[in-house]
Length: 266
Image (tube, rainbow, N blue to C red; front, top):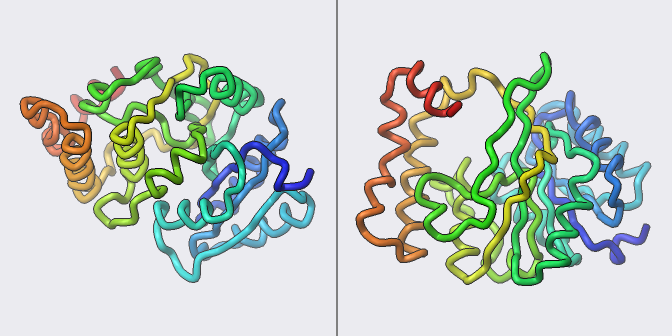
């Protein structure tokens, strides 16, 4: 398929995912909807991730492969991918995850039939080498600005959005204070610009995860979330009394781990 005729650009920042990249890409080529191109950007991998991506690019004409000169972070890397987007829609995908077969079919159908929405996503199934271990909760079906108070209203990796919305807000903001929360900030920007989105109720994406990742969340990532909440609440002009939730990431971080895990799972 000629890349310029595609309707979806799948943007992937790949970094040291040599052991999982083939499975991730194979899940895309197993989609029931095939009108897409893949734009992969290697973010300075030190394993053979780039070589595996090159092998796929040689076999498939719908792959654009680029690379950063050094490790720059996901926000910069995804913006690098966006420079090559010439399609109607942008879909996300990570190099260690799996898109279930009907993901693209159902996401693009929603956006095609609902031009008033710019974003669509879905809940995720979490898995590791031992299999599935958690089914992510269904978020607000039609998030509004108050859906942003607690946390990001959309899962990033399984999302699809209109390219026009990405372009209008300038893509991802590149700032060290936004690392690991770049998606939360992106949705804040889109909603502040008047765009809105929808969460499908079906689990169409599997995220490779660590059962114990919660225990290793860094203080810096919590500070970044505090920052993005504060900036985002201001963008959406939320009432001042909601600002108490800005400090939730730090307060949750000082809870005993067993309480944190219990609350997170609920």
